[in-house]
Image 1 (tube, rainbow, N blue to C red):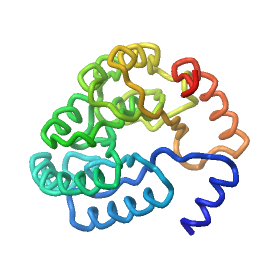
Image 2 (cartoon, one colour; image 1 turned 135 degrees about the horizontal axis):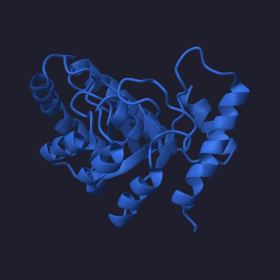
Image 3 (cartoon, rainbow, N blue to C red; image 1 turned 90 degrees about the vertical axis):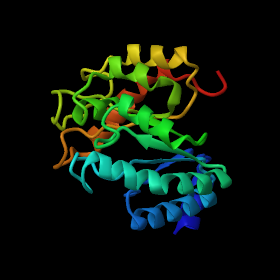
Length: 224
């Protein structure tokens, strides 16, 4: 199946950059899953994997201190395996130990591996971290190696991630901070609407096209 996907990518002239493959890296089972992801990335030529610590809630897998201990016990070895394959790890702001950029930055510094950084998701920082990303991003900017460009409406705990540029996130401020630290990592658009039931495919396509047009001025093409 992976070879079939690789063939389709080659056929259409597409170059995959990163894989979103969240593993419960506080557990041995999660490490096994992550190693499978490493294998897929090698075949497809991807150089980045987005993941998290596993749980989204503070109580997932025990207290935050318990999660931190279990995560740090495993992540350094995983990071070394990824580095040997030329792959960077991007820890997403996705609740729990990674609820905000500030928390993610503290964790990345504790890991202390050059190929481990932060996948900054401003929508998640609001949803899970109850924090304004425009203020939070400065705490993490120098460690961000990937970004999920995701908007949000409604504040903490509200699942409303609309067409990028139509929500409450000030992307101008975010990208100004990233530009100031020389961020040049990948940016992937995420539009999750209001969850299930999902809108018709035509609406999904429209939202993604509009999001692309909004984001384009902030993210120059590699040859520009």
